[in-house]
Length: 308
Image (cartoon, rainbow, N blue to C red):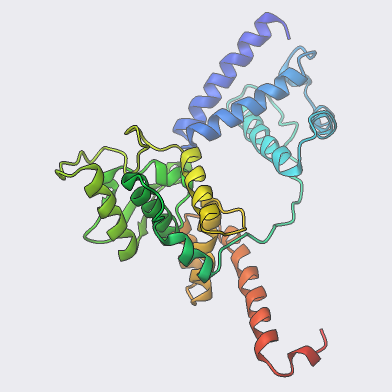
Protein backbone atom coordinates (compact mmCIF):
# COMPACT_ATOMS: atom_id res chain seq x y z
CA UNK A 1 0.00 0.00 0.00
CA UNK A 2 1.09 3.56 -0.63
CA UNK A 3 1.79 5.78 2.35
CA UNK A 4 -1.52 7.59 1.82
CA UNK A 5 -3.40 4.30 1.81
CA UNK A 6 -1.58 3.16 4.96
CA UNK A 7 -2.60 6.32 6.81
CA UNK A 8 -6.20 5.77 5.71
CA UNK A 9 -6.01 2.20 6.98
CA UNK A 10 -4.64 3.36 10.32
CA UNK A 11 -7.52 5.82 10.61
CA UNK A 12 -10.04 3.06 9.91
CA UNK A 13 -8.48 0.78 12.51
CA UNK A 14 -8.58 3.50 15.14
CA UNK A 15 -12.23 4.16 14.33
CA UNK A 16 -12.95 0.42 14.55
CA UNK A 17 -11.22 0.23 17.95
CA UNK A 18 -13.55 2.92 19.29
CA UNK A 19 -16.52 0.96 17.91
CA UNK A 20 -15.35 -2.28 19.58
CA UNK A 21 -14.81 -0.54 22.89
CA UNK A 22 -17.86 1.69 23.23
CA UNK A 23 -20.48 0.00 21.05
CA UNK A 24 -19.59 -3.70 21.35
CA UNK A 25 -18.15 -3.35 24.88
CA UNK A 26 -15.34 -5.78 24.07
CA UNK A 27 -12.50 -6.26 26.54
CA UNK A 28 -9.10 -4.69 25.99
CA UNK A 29 -7.54 -8.09 25.22
CA UNK A 30 -10.20 -8.94 22.64
CA UNK A 31 -9.81 -5.56 20.93
CA UNK A 32 -6.04 -5.91 20.74
CA UNK A 33 -6.42 -9.42 19.35
CA UNK A 34 -8.88 -8.27 16.66
CA UNK A 35 -6.64 -5.38 15.61
CA UNK A 36 -3.63 -7.73 15.31
CA UNK A 37 -5.66 -10.10 13.13
CA UNK A 38 -6.86 -7.30 10.85
CA UNK A 39 -3.37 -5.79 10.63
CA UNK A 40 -2.02 -9.20 9.59
CA UNK A 41 -4.64 -9.30 6.82
CA UNK A 42 -3.64 -5.81 5.66
CA UNK A 43 -0.01 -6.92 5.53
CA UNK A 44 -1.06 -9.87 3.37
CA UNK A 45 -2.94 -7.67 0.85
CA UNK A 46 -0.45 -4.77 0.84
CA UNK A 47 -0.01 -5.07 -2.94
CA UNK A 48 -3.61 -3.94 -3.50
CA UNK A 49 -4.31 -0.24 -3.96
CA UNK A 50 -7.59 0.03 -2.04
CA UNK A 51 -10.16 -1.90 -0.04
CA UNK A 52 -12.55 -2.26 -2.98
CA UNK A 53 -10.02 -4.56 -4.68
CA UNK A 54 -10.40 -7.16 -1.91
CA UNK A 55 -12.74 -9.97 -2.95
CA UNK A 56 -13.73 -13.42 -1.69
CA UNK A 57 -10.81 -15.08 -3.50
CA UNK A 58 -8.39 -12.73 -1.73
CA UNK A 59 -9.77 -13.83 1.60
CA UNK A 60 -9.57 -17.52 0.76
CA UNK A 61 -5.93 -17.01 -0.25
CA UNK A 62 -5.34 -15.44 3.16
CA UNK A 63 -6.91 -18.42 4.93
CA UNK A 64 -4.76 -20.80 2.87
CA UNK A 65 -1.70 -18.73 3.82
CA UNK A 66 -2.61 -19.05 7.51
CA UNK A 67 -2.92 -22.83 7.14
CA UNK A 68 0.20 -23.51 5.10
CA UNK A 69 2.68 -20.79 6.07
CA UNK A 70 1.64 -19.98 9.64
CA UNK A 71 0.39 -23.52 10.35
CA UNK A 72 -2.50 -22.19 12.43
CA UNK A 73 -5.17 -24.55 13.68
CA UNK A 74 -8.85 -24.18 12.81
CA UNK A 75 -9.71 -22.51 16.11
CA UNK A 76 -7.11 -19.76 15.59
CA UNK A 77 -8.21 -19.23 12.00
CA UNK A 78 -11.83 -18.98 13.12
CA UNK A 79 -10.89 -16.16 15.47
CA UNK A 80 -9.33 -14.25 12.59
CA UNK A 81 -12.39 -14.91 10.44
CA UNK A 82 -14.59 -13.48 13.21
CA UNK A 83 -12.41 -10.38 13.47
CA UNK A 84 -12.44 -9.75 9.72
CA UNK A 85 -16.15 -10.45 9.27
CA UNK A 86 -17.00 -7.91 11.97
CA UNK A 87 -14.51 -5.41 10.52
CA UNK A 88 -15.88 -5.59 6.97
CA UNK A 89 -19.44 -5.45 8.26
CA UNK A 90 -18.43 -2.27 10.10
CA UNK A 91 -16.86 -0.80 6.94
CA UNK A 92 -20.06 -1.38 4.95
CA UNK A 93 -22.38 -0.03 7.65
CA UNK A 94 -20.27 3.14 7.90
CA UNK A 95 -20.08 3.56 4.10
CA UNK A 96 -16.33 3.03 3.80
CA UNK A 97 -16.96 0.30 1.20
CA UNK A 98 -20.06 -0.64 -0.81
CA UNK A 99 -19.95 -4.44 -0.76
CA UNK A 100 -18.84 -6.85 1.97
CA UNK A 101 -16.61 -9.39 0.16
CA UNK A 102 -16.63 -11.91 3.01
CA UNK A 103 -20.23 -11.80 4.23
CA UNK A 104 -20.81 -15.42 3.12
CA UNK A 105 -17.55 -16.81 4.51
CA UNK A 106 -18.20 -19.64 6.97
CA UNK A 107 -16.15 -20.63 10.00
CA UNK A 108 -14.44 -23.99 10.17
CA UNK A 109 -16.48 -26.63 11.93
CA UNK A 110 -14.69 -27.76 15.07
CA UNK A 111 -15.58 -30.89 16.99
CA UNK A 112 -16.24 -29.90 20.58
CA UNK A 113 -13.97 -31.72 22.97
CA UNK A 114 -15.38 -33.02 26.22
CA UNK A 115 -14.03 -30.63 28.89
CA UNK A 116 -11.61 -31.95 31.48
CA UNK A 117 -12.96 -31.82 35.02
CA UNK A 118 -12.01 -33.10 38.46
CA UNK A 119 -13.95 -35.75 40.32
CA UNK A 120 -15.07 -35.22 43.92
CA UNK A 121 -11.99 -36.90 45.42
CA UNK A 122 -9.62 -34.80 43.32
CA UNK A 123 -11.31 -31.48 44.07
CA UNK A 124 -11.45 -32.36 47.79
CA UNK A 125 -7.69 -32.87 47.84
CA UNK A 126 -7.06 -29.70 45.84
CA UNK A 127 -9.17 -27.55 48.18
CA UNK A 128 -7.10 -28.44 51.24
CA UNK A 129 -4.57 -25.91 52.46
CA UNK A 130 -0.96 -26.78 51.69
CA UNK A 131 0.44 -27.44 55.17
CA UNK A 132 3.99 -27.53 53.77
CA UNK A 133 3.77 -23.94 52.48
CA UNK A 134 5.67 -21.81 55.02
CA UNK A 135 4.43 -18.45 53.75
CA UNK A 136 1.10 -18.04 55.54
CA UNK A 137 -0.24 -15.34 53.20
CA UNK A 138 0.47 -17.46 50.12
CA UNK A 139 -0.99 -20.60 51.71
CA UNK A 140 -4.28 -18.96 52.66
CA UNK A 141 -4.51 -16.92 49.45
CA UNK A 142 -3.97 -19.91 47.16
CA UNK A 143 -6.55 -21.96 49.04
CA UNK A 144 -9.08 -19.10 48.90
CA UNK A 145 -8.56 -18.61 45.15
CA UNK A 146 -9.13 -22.28 44.35
CA UNK A 147 -12.14 -22.45 46.65
CA UNK A 148 -13.65 -19.40 44.96
CA UNK A 149 -12.94 -20.72 41.44
CA UNK A 150 -14.67 -23.98 42.27
CA UNK A 151 -17.47 -22.33 44.24
CA UNK A 152 -18.42 -19.86 41.48
CA UNK A 153 -17.09 -21.09 38.12
CA UNK A 154 -15.54 -17.68 37.52
CA UNK A 155 -13.19 -17.17 34.58
CA UNK A 156 -9.58 -16.43 35.53
CA UNK A 157 -9.90 -12.94 34.00
CA UNK A 158 -12.93 -12.30 36.19
CA UNK A 159 -11.34 -13.43 39.44
CA UNK A 160 -8.22 -11.26 39.02
CA UNK A 161 -10.34 -8.19 38.26
CA UNK A 162 -12.35 -8.50 41.50
CA UNK A 163 -12.06 -5.72 44.05
CA UNK A 164 -12.89 -6.12 47.74
CA UNK A 165 -15.99 -3.97 47.25
CA UNK A 166 -17.39 -6.38 44.66
CA UNK A 167 -18.10 -8.95 47.36
CA UNK A 168 -21.21 -8.90 49.52
CA UNK A 169 -20.37 -11.18 52.45
CA UNK A 170 -23.82 -10.75 53.97
CA UNK A 171 -25.68 -12.07 50.92
CA UNK A 172 -22.87 -14.33 49.63
CA UNK A 173 -22.91 -12.73 46.19
CA UNK A 174 -20.26 -11.18 43.93
CA UNK A 175 -20.73 -8.49 41.30
CA UNK A 176 -18.76 -9.64 38.27
CA UNK A 177 -17.97 -8.06 34.92
CA UNK A 178 -17.62 -10.83 32.35
CA UNK A 179 -17.08 -10.95 28.60
CA UNK A 180 -18.13 -7.79 26.81
CA UNK A 181 -18.14 -6.01 30.18
CA UNK A 182 -21.53 -7.57 30.89
CA UNK A 183 -22.30 -7.44 34.60
CA UNK A 184 -23.80 -10.40 36.42
CA UNK A 185 -24.32 -11.57 39.97
CA UNK A 186 -22.54 -14.75 41.11
CA UNK A 187 -23.31 -16.77 44.24
CA UNK A 188 -20.56 -18.23 46.43
CA UNK A 189 -20.66 -20.67 49.32
CA UNK A 190 -19.80 -20.41 53.00
CA UNK A 191 -16.55 -22.35 52.58
CA UNK A 192 -15.32 -19.73 50.11
CA UNK A 193 -16.52 -16.92 52.38
CA UNK A 194 -14.58 -18.27 55.37
CA UNK A 195 -11.39 -18.64 53.33
CA UNK A 196 -11.64 -15.18 51.75
CA UNK A 197 -12.27 -13.55 55.14
CA UNK A 198 -9.33 -15.47 56.60
CA UNK A 199 -7.12 -14.21 53.78
CA UNK A 200 -8.28 -10.61 54.22
CA UNK A 201 -7.54 -10.76 57.96
CA UNK A 202 -3.97 -11.79 57.16
CA UNK A 203 -3.27 -9.04 54.62
CA UNK A 204 -5.19 -6.38 56.57
CA UNK A 205 -4.98 -7.11 60.26
CA UNK A 206 -6.60 -3.78 61.11
CA UNK A 207 -9.57 -4.51 58.78
CA UNK A 208 -9.16 -1.06 57.23
CA UNK A 209 -10.12 -1.99 53.68
CA UNK A 210 -10.27 0.21 50.63
CA UNK A 211 -13.18 -1.25 48.67
CA UNK A 212 -11.36 -0.46 45.39
CA UNK A 213 -8.36 -2.57 46.35
CA UNK A 214 -7.85 -5.85 44.46
CA UNK A 215 -9.27 -8.85 46.25
CA UNK A 216 -6.30 -11.06 45.43
CA UNK A 217 -2.78 -9.72 45.20
CA UNK A 218 0.71 -11.10 44.68
CA UNK A 219 3.26 -11.17 47.48
CA UNK A 220 4.45 -7.68 46.47
CA UNK A 221 1.00 -6.27 47.10
CA UNK A 222 0.02 -5.81 43.44
CA UNK A 223 -3.06 -7.24 41.72
CA UNK A 224 -2.61 -10.85 40.63
CA UNK A 225 -2.46 -11.51 36.89
CA UNK A 226 -4.25 -14.33 35.04
CA UNK A 227 -0.86 -15.98 34.54
CA UNK A 228 -0.22 -15.77 38.28
CA UNK A 229 -3.48 -17.57 39.07
CA UNK A 230 -2.75 -20.23 36.44
CA UNK A 231 0.60 -20.94 38.08
CA UNK A 232 -1.00 -21.09 41.54
CA UNK A 233 -3.57 -23.67 40.40
CA UNK A 234 -1.00 -25.73 38.51
CA UNK A 235 1.47 -25.75 41.40
CA UNK A 236 -1.17 -26.76 43.93
CA UNK A 237 -2.46 -29.58 41.71
CA UNK A 238 1.04 -30.99 41.26
CA UNK A 239 1.67 -30.87 45.01
CA UNK A 240 -1.68 -32.61 45.56
CA UNK A 241 -0.57 -35.45 43.28
CA UNK A 242 -3.27 -34.85 40.65
CA UNK A 243 -2.03 -36.10 37.27
CA UNK A 244 -4.50 -34.10 35.16
CA UNK A 245 -3.45 -30.76 33.70
CA UNK A 246 -5.39 -28.57 36.12
CA UNK A 247 -6.08 -24.96 35.09
CA UNK A 248 -8.55 -22.32 36.32
CA UNK A 249 -10.75 -23.28 33.35
CA UNK A 250 -10.73 -26.91 34.46
CA UNK A 251 -12.13 -25.71 37.80
CA UNK A 252 -14.81 -23.81 35.88
CA UNK A 253 -15.68 -27.03 34.04
CA UNK A 254 -15.68 -28.90 37.35
CA UNK A 255 -18.08 -26.37 38.89
CA UNK A 256 -20.55 -26.74 36.00
CA UNK A 257 -20.28 -30.51 35.77
CA UNK A 258 -20.83 -31.10 39.47
CA UNK A 259 -23.89 -28.81 39.49
CA UNK A 260 -25.36 -30.62 36.50
CA UNK A 261 -24.71 -34.01 38.10
CA UNK A 262 -26.59 -32.80 41.18
CA UNK A 263 -29.62 -31.97 39.06
CA UNK A 264 -29.35 -28.22 38.53
CA UNK A 265 -31.19 -26.90 35.48
CA UNK A 266 -28.91 -26.20 32.50
CA UNK A 267 -30.28 -22.67 32.06
CA UNK A 268 -29.39 -21.79 35.64
CA UNK A 269 -25.86 -23.06 35.07
CA UNK A 270 -25.75 -20.93 31.91
CA UNK A 271 -26.57 -17.85 33.98
CA UNK A 272 -23.99 -18.66 36.64
CA UNK A 273 -21.27 -19.18 34.02
CA UNK A 274 -22.20 -16.04 32.12
CA UNK A 275 -22.68 -17.87 28.81
CA UNK A 276 -24.55 -15.81 26.21
CA UNK A 277 -25.88 -18.93 24.47
CA UNK A 278 -27.25 -22.13 25.98
CA UNK A 279 -25.42 -24.13 23.27
CA UNK A 280 -22.12 -23.20 24.94
CA UNK A 281 -23.30 -24.73 28.21
CA UNK A 282 -24.71 -27.88 26.61
CA UNK A 283 -21.24 -29.40 26.27
CA UNK A 284 -21.58 -30.41 29.94
CA UNK A 285 -24.58 -32.63 29.22
CA UNK A 286 -22.29 -35.01 27.32
CA UNK A 287 -20.11 -35.35 30.41
CA UNK A 288 -23.14 -36.28 32.51
CA UNK A 289 -24.36 -38.80 29.93
CA UNK A 290 -20.93 -40.43 29.87
CA UNK A 291 -20.92 -40.56 33.67
CA UNK A 292 -24.42 -42.08 33.67
CA UNK A 293 -23.33 -44.80 31.24
CA UNK A 294 -20.24 -45.52 33.36
CA UNK A 295 -22.27 -45.85 36.57
CA UNK A 296 -24.90 -47.97 34.81
CA UNK A 297 -22.26 -50.34 33.42
CA UNK A 298 -20.83 -50.86 36.90
CA UNK A 299 -24.13 -51.12 38.75
CA UNK A 300 -26.53 -52.99 36.48
CA UNK A 301 -26.15 -56.78 36.62
CA UNK A 302 -27.13 -57.18 32.96
CA UNK A 303 -25.36 -54.13 31.58
CA UNK A 304 -22.54 -56.08 29.91
CA UNK A 305 -25.08 -58.21 28.05
CA UNK A 306 -26.96 -55.29 26.49
CA UNK A 307 -26.30 -54.75 22.80
CA UNK A 308 -25.54 -51.20 21.62
